[in-house]
Length: 123
Image (cartoon, rainbow, N blue to C red; front, side, top):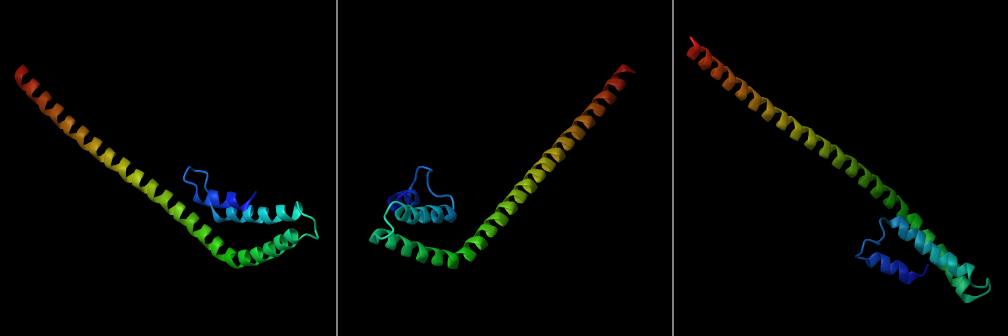
């Protein structure tokens, strides 16, 4: 994982973008850990990656409560949307049921009238 990949995924328009901030966090962390893993412990790159990872983790911990709060809000919003969709469907079904009942009632009334006329003509 390289930082350019993170930027590309953040700007992607083809569906390969990050779905949430935790994915960005995981990839950013991977950039730093890979730099440490693939460079000698005494190298400047290793030291800079280690320092950057520590700073990144510190900033992440400050951001994490907001992330958790937003995730909870989105979950609640999703549940509310689902509930609203269910209620909308129930209302639509109830409307269809009422309309069907009214049509059947009208049809029954017409059949009664027709039956009465037929009985009258048969007398």
